[in-house]
Picture 1 (tube, rainbow, N blue to C red):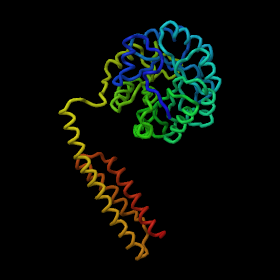
Picture 2: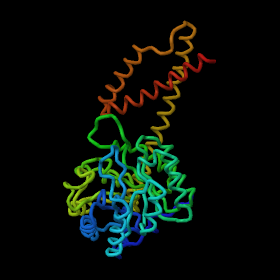
Picture 3: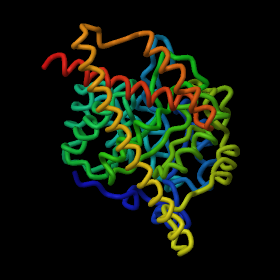
Picture 4: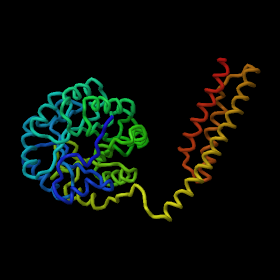
Length: 368
């Protein structure tokens, strides 16, 4: 898969922005209202955002909604308004597409960047329809994660778009839907994006704190977390009058607050040329390597005992799974960890994995 870096995305609005885009140290920032509502609302919002150092403006033209009779976007007329904004401000524009018709209309009105939403990524047929409409047009495309935490589905969506000849490709992490009650609208599940990056290291990775948090107060801390994890860009929803927005009012910020958030964010270096830092880093990593080796050796020793335990159970016609023993283990190990300053849930998760492997080993011997 051939992927171009963000330096080749769109037209920077100022020399300062051009420097920011060209530098790996600066994130690629996309901002704008959740939805284009009126030409006045769209232009006023974008004008206010134009001098904040953004790289592209966003606005939803079509809005996939959970239930009918909700505001579903203004449609094609919004693209006319957005093109006028682009012509006036000279900043690239971005919008979501969910059908081949959306793609054709977005290209007709000169949209610079397209993204595929979570509700579309979850359906391979929809993604393939969009991919087919994109053949022969190498426009930047961002693929959001599917609603459900399915990494293969996310990667599959990216591959379908890449197979259509798109080289300016990126992923957008916007959190995952869950029935679990949490403070966020969508659970971040950071490990999913980290695994995506480990499998596709050259792929630019964006983060959408607006849809992840669902409330404007979460935008700054979630954005900082993403930058701490070395994400390449952010997409943040901003509205000239967010409290009266026609969609997702609670997760949008004013352009003034957006500018404050950008100024407050700390950009982390990928590494440091400081010799003292490099030496300390190597020393600490060496210690971690030794400890990790010891952990693996201890796990191997534990599993040998598990194997012997399984053998005794078979010889005495005893069931592999002992619920009383498991309850005792699951209660005691997290408590041991907590006394040593570790997170109880973390230790509990580790021992659940260990227990699952122990059961697998014992039942495998029974099968033999």
